[in-house]
Length: 137
Image 1 (tube, rainbow, N blue to C red):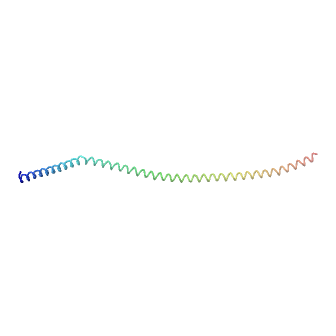
Image 2 (tube, one colour):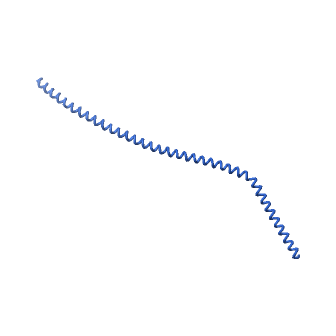
Image 3 (spheres, one colour):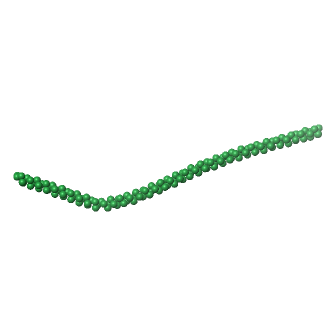
């Protein structure tokens, strides 16, 4: 083979390679466009659904946070009420003890007064009984 024939064959082979590359590029572009057209609406639908679900989740999270704040507020009010109830019960108990102490003191004083008066009267009775006995004999 001559130099020219070899060069022509090399040129022809290079030309075939170029055609194969161009054909592959066209096929690749065609497939990319075809798949884009096929999947783009599906991706759009999924993205839309995802956005809706994320919004719902955001709303739920906000509601949970609100409920947690309300729960914390209620727990705070509960703690305050428990503290006030304990204080009121303590005051009630203290007042009861004070009343019982005063009642016992008053009852004791009445008992002492009664005992003292009874002793005075008993002494008078004994004196009168002695006088009566003395008169009777």
